[in-house]
Amino acid sequence: MDKRRETYDVDVGGVKIGSSHPIRIQSMTNTQTEDSIKTASQIKELYDSGSELVRITVNNEESAKSVIKIKDILVKSNYNVPLIGDFHYNGHTLLTNHPETASILDKYRVNPGNVGSSDNKNFSEIIEIAKNNNKAIRIGGNWGSLNKTYLERTVVDGKKSEDYEDIIKNALIESVLKSAEFAEGLGLSSDKIILSCKVSSVSQLVDVYTDIAKKCKYPLHLGLTEAGMGDEAMVSSVAALAILINQGIGDTIRVSLTPDQMGVRTKEVEVCKNILSSLNLKQFKPKVVSCPGCGRTSSSYFIELTKDINKHIENNMIRWKSNYKNVENINIAVMGCIVNGPGESKHANIGISLPGTNESPSAPVYVDGEKVTTLRGDAIKDDFLGIIENYIDKNYEKIN
Image (cartoon, rainbow, N blue to C red; front, side, top):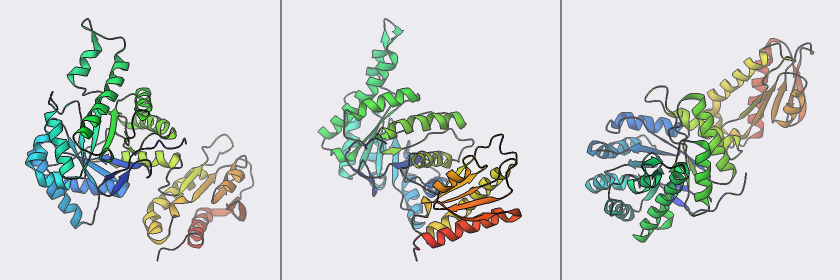
């Protein structure tokens, strides 16, 4: 990965965002914020799954009042998770009318395209409230909600301009940078501002962020907006974010996925974790390198063993992390034949090379590059899991 682009450090409820700190994962609830119990419950789920900050919709009087109840529930449950208020159109009014909510929220997300005041009065009110409460803001432009001034540039002689995409990209960047400059002119310090420019095309997102990264030192929030549902959406998000992060661009990330059902949100957090893990920026659980299978692997045992190991990790991760430091950094290899099996196994902390078609029915096991035993028979799974448990106990410092 290229050296991280240097930015200001922004404190959001105790979580520092910027180039001096790890890339932060965040998500957003899809509950009705007015329902404080359901919203607090989903915030807990997102936090437990790895979201370091959580954004909630604040769009009316009821939701603004509910923020107080949500925070109370979280505090009583010992959840210290930074909350971001997502404001559109009436944020200035809601923050003014509900000063306790303005004080409780750790960051305000404002879209310059729909603040709703041509003279910047509404935006100015939000900035003043942020200053008075010592809060950070995210100035988040979105290509689906640019203000009228920018949209007028996309029409030439009553028709959509041939340069439509370039105009939109440039307008997004100009919109958030001018808004940030205006906010600083009102007295908001530079280390209270995070920027984002959301589009739904991978190539456009890469272009926009590559450009804006050269023009400012504000931390950047990355995310492909309206990515869609399922594998296609995940692949698009991974492609866009991985390209930018690998270039040293990006300080906080969100993967926006249309859920299979309302109320379920943790999948997008898992995708974020996998992105950071794949780029070797942070490992959240032991990594299992496993064989894809080919004509040499007539048995499906390598598949079953890989499933069993992943399930074992899932079932024991909380216990491991409670008892051992850095246990998430283990690498495990499950290989299916002699071609790459021994080599891949030696590269891992713990590796097993299962027999392929017509190979000897034995499975050598390697620990930190050295062959330690050979497993055979019906007990291979249990024996190998035992080796993993023994390795953890011997090689990782105990917390208590």
